[in-house]
Image 1 (tube, rainbow, N blue to C red):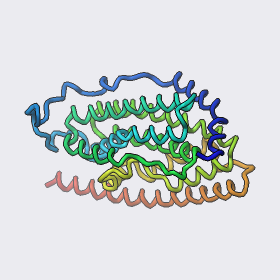
Image 2 (tube, one colour; image 1 turned 90 degrees about the vertical axis):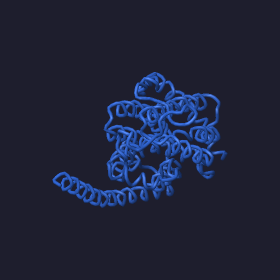
Image 3 (cartoon, helix red, strand yellow; image 1 turned 120 degrees about the vertical axis):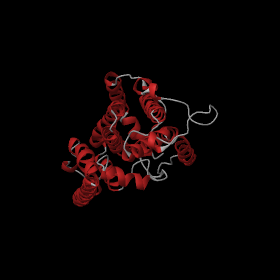
Image 4 (cartoon, one colour; image 1 turned 60 degrees about the vertical axis):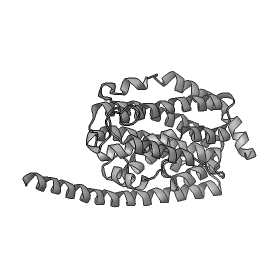
Length: 316
């Protein structure tokens, strides 16, 4: 670890402790099993000689199903995330206490989502397990060149992006039980985002130029942690069109709220490197807004065509 990162860890220790205490005082305990429709469950074929899964058994939309699978497989990689964060933040003091708490809370998400998917027969259990084995066998390898600040910026953006994806997945599912479960999970993700976002506020005070460079690097190259999951690109296209997560949401509901809250684009007194990063970040956001507008137009055309086809089918 770089010397500057070690110094920053110590500098932010008090802020971490404060944010940890705030989180513990705000977070509400909840039980994953309470959000699962156990009365819908029955044995699958195999050792217990139950009923084989078939696609017609799923009651949720295809977009919601794909999104839930991507979300679950992302959560399943938790051991790798914990390891990579522990290497950066360490496991001592407030940093370590936070990391363990974060890991425990994220673990509840995968428990609830998997139990829901299998109990409600919303997904092929064999395919799901094969995907899990593939994804976890690859693990998650953090960028060795990334600094603590890069990790903090990434986690802030990723937690809010995940919160939006979870919440919109529940809404798109068409199942009130799924909607309730994903809304509960989204609350956790929002609190996680607040932890990292508030720490970045402290980082901007003590290391403004380095933090600005981290913002520029992460925002302009951001990818969701599940991007390496098999079938991710197809799922991403479908959930984008269905309004679960897309460029417009990423720009309007994720990036802009974070940057405005921290006044990233308005921060003055930066050095040459920080000012250059700030300018590049502003230009990127302008470009992203243009791309989001183009996407909106394409999406509207696709949805209009789907509606027209559906209406013609009903008339026939």
